[in-house]
Length: 292
Image (cartoon, rainbow, N blue to C red; front, side, top):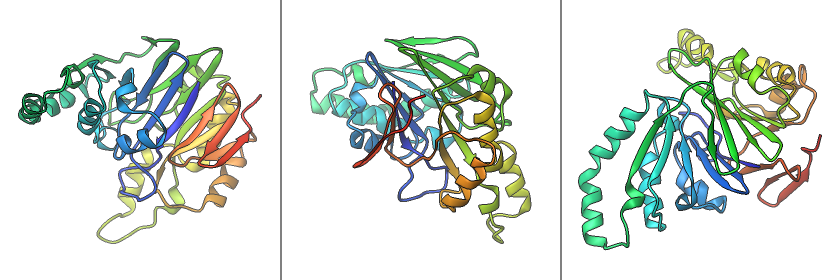
C-alpha cells in the first residue's frame, strides 16, 4: 500500500499546500480520498491520472475537501476515462454532488455533442452512502469508515485502510476521537490532521478569540496529536491538514515528540509513504524509515 499526500492544506489558500486529498494505491486499487483544490494537478504530479481512479471517497461536507469535484470529473473524462465515478460519501454530501452535476449539465451536454469522444460514461456519477462499520472492498483494498468528532459537521469520517497485511489510518477532520484510536490500533501509518493553536494569532477584523476557540474545538491540537499516535500504537505519524498552513516546523516536531517517540513527518504535498518497502519519498528525497 502506498499513501500519497496530494493536499496538506486547509481552507486558507496557500501556494504550496493544496486542499485536502490523499491518494491510496495498492496492487489492485487506486482510491482518492477527498478532492480539495488543486487535486487534479497533484494527481498528475504524482503520476496518476484521474482516469485511473477506481473510486472517490469523501470524508465530510466541507468545501476544502470537495471543491474540485467537478474539475476532477471533467478532466478525467478528457484523459479518456470511460467508467462512471463511484463516490462513497456521507449522506449529507450526496445532494451537493448531485446538485453540482445538475448545475453543470448544460455544459457537459455541449461538450459531449461537440467533441465527439468515444464515450460519455466517464461523466456519470453514482453516490453510495458511507456508514460506520460498513467496510468497502475495492480490489485488494479494504476501507473501514469510522465516525469521527468534527461536530457540528455530522457525519464526518476517518478511515482505516487494509491491504496485503498493512494498515494505514486517515483521520479526516476530527478532534481527538476514541473510536478512531480503537479502530486503528497497531497501524503502520497514521495520517492525522493538526491544529496549531499557538500559531493562530488574533487579527482584528479577521480572527478573534471566539473564532480561534470555535475552530480549535473540532480539530486535534498540536499538543494532542502525538498522544493520539502513541495510544493507537502507530508505527509512524504523518501530519497533514495544517491549520494554519504556515508554522514553526521545529516547534511542532518538538511538541509532538513530547508524547510520541516514533517517526514523525511534517506532511508536504506529494510526500509518499510506501508501507511495503518502508520508503518515504518527496521529490528526489527518499529514505527507508517505515519498517517496524
